[in-house]
Length: 352
Ligand SMILES: *Cc1c(COP(=O)(O)O)cnc(C)c1O
Image (cartoon, rainbow, N blue to C red; front, side, top):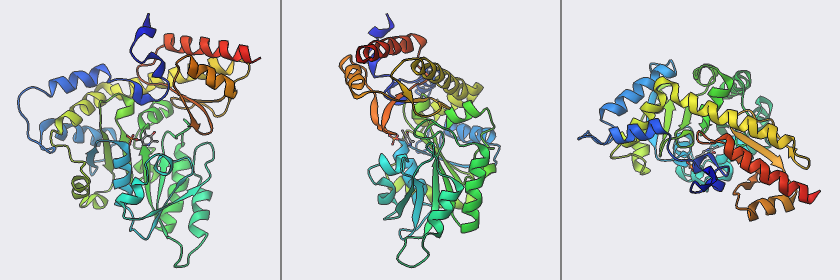
């Protein structure tokens, strides 16, 4: 039975509880043949950078790799503003709630300014309000905006919303950063070209998540404008983010981007989340909080039901969006969803 898999009941806690997808694992092993130049001067790193330029239809794209999303976001944001300036994000943003102050640390003090999220998102109006709120010398002048695609609660920014935010950015001299820890899920769901929801909508830098889409480790930092990438390599090195055996980070990326494997796996995760959303929505006592647009399902459950599910061994977080969050991944199966929903139905029935 599949529920004998190690960690079976951990799988909905996050998409990073899943392992490495087969294509990435094979590439990892293939990279192990023979010798290669270190620090990104190898063949597969060059190839993946070229492939990213193709995927994003942007010849001047500059690509860097970091070990995790916290480093990628923090270093990217640090490159966009001075210590006395600030970064606008939502109050639910990973940079605000889950990076232990790393953006402030790596930027030497740039303050995060938060706006309440609307379905997980910033709006053009909320950015504009934070920019205009104060203009005196005592206020840390906004210099960057960061948006998360797909959002922390599993919703999506549509192209027009990004373009609207970017318009406010441009009018006020702000840089636009995208935390794409789940960028693959966004592209798979919106069925758009990656360029359309990034640089063509005014995004300057994208932190493109690899880990959650099925890589062993590693996020790509994409600068759409070459000028802004100046000296970024030094910033990565100083922060301890330059991989010496870079080929082990880059080869799995290559396998992921070839034959659209990234979209295949992200599409699967999204489909599983939609299925899970619909199955939970049918249960009396479960209140769905947000539309499932990517690979997350957020649901309000009675405290006793949360407790009972944890007693049965299911792990999931309740601190994100103030509710129970279930994430699906490339590895989620319908059998796993059956098992989760059966237990949830049973504990909710006991409540009734
Ligand atoms: C997971 C995640 C990250 C990256 O987190 P790390 O643990 O540092 O790799 C960044 N942003 C969002 C929205 C995430 O969910």
